[in-house]
Length: 331
Image (cartoon, rainbow, N blue to C red):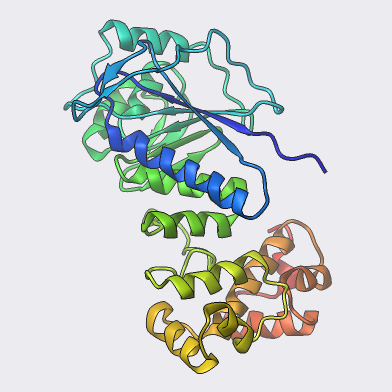
C-alpha cells in the first residue's frame, strides 16, 4: 500500500507576526513527524515558512531570515495536499494597507480551496487576513475575541462564532488565538494521523487538549492524560496504538516496569481510572469509529479487541452509551 501523501504546510509570515501563533503549531507538526518515524511510519508534514519578504521581524523583535517567497501557483490536487496557515498580528485592528499585507492578500485571492487538497488554517487574527482576501464567504469561523466585531465587519457573509477555541468548516479551520492554534493543529493531527499520535504529541508538548464549550467530550484517546507520569503515558500510548492486543494488568505493568498492584495505584492516582476500565474505553472508542464507518457489529468488535460482539454490547451498556451498537452504524 502506498504511503499517504506528505502535506505541505505553508506558514505565511508577515512583519511582526505573533510568534506563538506559528511556532507552537509548527512544533506540534515537527513532533508528530518524530512520533511517526519512531513507529516506523513515514513523516506526514513538510513545513515551509513563506512571506512577501525574505527576512522580517517577529512580534517580539527576533529577526527571521530565509523565508521562502510566496509560491507563484498553488493548485488543489489530492497528490500534493497543502495547508496554508495564516497567523495573527499585534494591534487592536489588522492593518492591510501596507505593501507586505497587500502582497499576501493578492496571493491569497488566487487560492481555490478544496477539502483534503488545499486547506486553510487560521490562528488568531489570521482569520481577518482570510476575510480581507474573500476566502470566508459562507463559512463558519472564529478569531480572537478582540477581533470578532472586526471580522463581522470585514466579511458580513460569514458566520462568526464567539466563545470557541476553534471552529472546523472544511476546508477552512479557524482558531481563537495564540495557544488555541496549538489546540486546532492537535485536532488536525488527530484527524490526519490518528488520535493516539495526537495524544503523544500533546504529552510531549506538556499541553492539554481542549475544545470549545459546545463541543463533545474529549475522546478517551485524549482523556485521562492530564498528568506527567512517563511510565503511565508509556502504557497508555501502547494501549491506544494497539487496543486489539491481549492486554492484561500484568502485561501493562511489565511495560511500565512495575508491579500490577502498583500500576493500578498509578492509574487511579494520576489518570483517575483503573487500567482495565481505561482499556475498555479505548476499545469502545475504536468500535464506535468502526461502526460509524459502516462496519457491522461483529467486525467492529473484532477491530476493537473485544472477544465477541456480546462483549462489545455489554461494555456499551455498562458505560451508559445511548442506544445499541447496531444503531451507531453510519450515524
